[in-house]
Length: 231
Ligand SMILES: [Zn+2]
Image 1 (cartoon, rainbow, N blue to C red):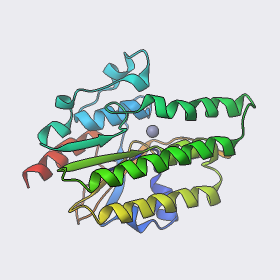
Image 2: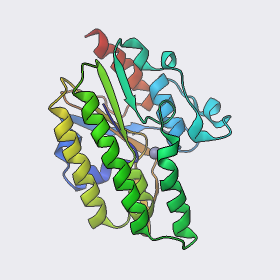
Image 3: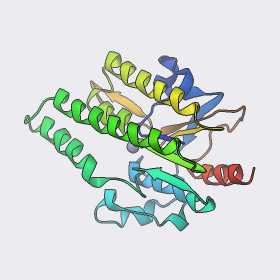
């Protein structure tokens, strides 16, 4: 499973990312949430129910952590969840990204400084992910923040975003070689605000088989994944 933060349905289509689209793809419905917040949506995805209220009670949103038994991973014997917000998120690793985002608006660093760290973190996670899917887990979820992180300062710069989407498309192509089935999900997409990007009101899903899900809620996938376990 690939969790791709901030992956925008419209860019996936426009840039022709066939490996991200797989056999069936579409938008998700996240209208039940007051705002498309990353930690809220991923936590709800993992638990199969709307956790907005509970997550927002947390002082530091990014530190919110579900217990394994509250997630669909508990349905499996051997699982791995890498850097997933609301569960196994590496707050320390992402701290630098956040500092550089703030630093850009305070004119302390450039967008390029910020992009560089985002790409380094991505590379690190990619290595961990391929190591994990080479092992005998029943289910592995790799979370990649790249499209969201780069998108916040560059979503309106299409040539740059196209390169990022092409990278994620090749990640999906490589990952597919290891799996019987692959689910790709994003928490929300993005919309351009000048050169910058803001969260959009829908997410993205795709699966490597013919399956018409229409526009499912993000909380629907818990049942789908549970079903895959039984199949
Ligand atoms: Zn997000």
